[in-house]
Length: 490
Image 1 (cartoon, rainbow, N blue to C red):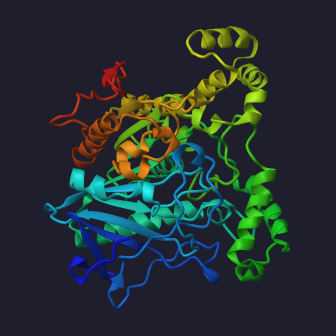
Image 2: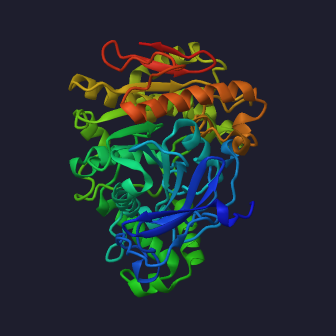
Image 3: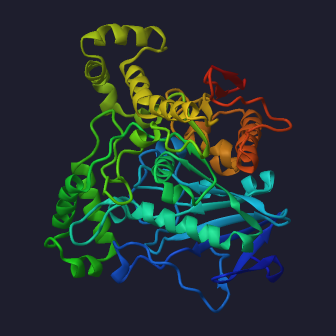
C-alpha cells in the first residue's frame, strides 16, 4: 500500500470527535471508524454499547480488519481476499467524493456471508470507485458473525447481536451524516445475502426501518425459516461444551482466547451443517420476541413495508456457486434432486421434475436441484414480498441478474452481481466467476447496474441518462433482467 503523505490527509469533525481520512484520486477514505465500543473482554457476547466521544483526532487511514471467521464456502467462486481478523470489529469503512454536493446521498452496504463470514473492510467491497462514479457517500458496515454474533447462549448471550450491531451502526451513520456532507434524510441501506436478510428483519420492524429511507435487497434468502430462541439455545449449550465450560460460565467465556472460541464454533458448525444441497447456516437470526417477532417473510408479505421505497432482486442460478466443484454432491445429485422434488410436490413430483428438466440444459440432477432451491429460498419469496408491497400501493423495483460466468458450472451464481456493483474490477478479476470474461463487457454492465442502483439511492427511481427504462413492479409485475442485453419484462 502506498504510504500516505501529509497532504493526502483529510480531517473531518464529527459529534464524536475528529476523523483523519486519506485523500486519493478524488475520494476521501476513512477506515475502521468505530460505531460502538469494542466487543471484547467484559463486552464479549453482550449487546453493543454506544461509542464514547474521543478527544484526539482518530487516525482512519490504515488497513482495515474483519471480524473473526472461518473460511468462506464461496471463496471457490468469489476468490479469496485475506485480511487481518480482529474481535474489535464494530467499525465502518467510508468513501466520500472529495468534492461533494450539498446533502449527498448515503449508500450503506451490509455484506453477506451466511452470517458467518465477510466484512466491510474486504478489498472486494472497496467502495472508492462506487463513490467516485456515482457521487454518493458509500459506507460499509462490519458486524459480529458466527457464534459471536448470532448464537443465543442462556445466561450469556441474547442472540441477534450482529443485528443489534447493524442497528447501532445505522444510528451512528445518521448522527455523523451531516459531518460527512451527507443527507441524513436520504440513506439507502443495501445488502447482499445475509445482509439483505438483515434488511428484511429491519423492514419488518417499524422502529428500525425508520433508520433508513430506502433499501436494496440483493439475493435475500427469505425462504429460510427462523427458529425461536429456545431451540437455538440448545445449540448454545453445545457450544459451551465445545469450549470446555459449564453452562452460564460468563467469566470463562470472557477469559478464553478468540482462537479457542473459533475452534469451538468450527466443531459445532460441522456437527450442524446444512443438509446436502441446502444453504441454511448453523448460526443466523432467531425469533427472540423482542427484535424479531416473526419470520420477516411472514411480516413483509403482509405488506408491512409498503411505505418504504425498496428494490429487491436475485440471480438466475443462486445455488450454482454452492454446488460448484462439489464432488460429494455430484455423486448423489439425482437422489438429492428426486428427494427435494418429493418434498415440494408430493404425488406430482415426477411430473414437476420432468417439466423442470425440459426447460433446463444440461438437465443434470444438480441443475434441477439448484433451480428448485433457488426458487424456494430466493426467487419466489422475493417476488412475494415485492407483490405484497405493490398490492398495498407501493411501487417496488425488481431485478434478476442473468449475466453468467464464462467458467462452466458457475453460471449466474450467488454473489455474481457484486463486482458489477462495486466496479473495482482489478480486485475482482482474479475471481473464478470472472475468469475468461470480456472485461469491456463487464465494465459496461457494471456502469449500468451501478448507475441504476445509484439513481434509486438518489431519487427512489433507478432511471436516468444513459440508463435503461426500468418500470416498477406494479401490475403486470415487471422485472428488469441484467445480462448482455438488458430488458424489462413481466
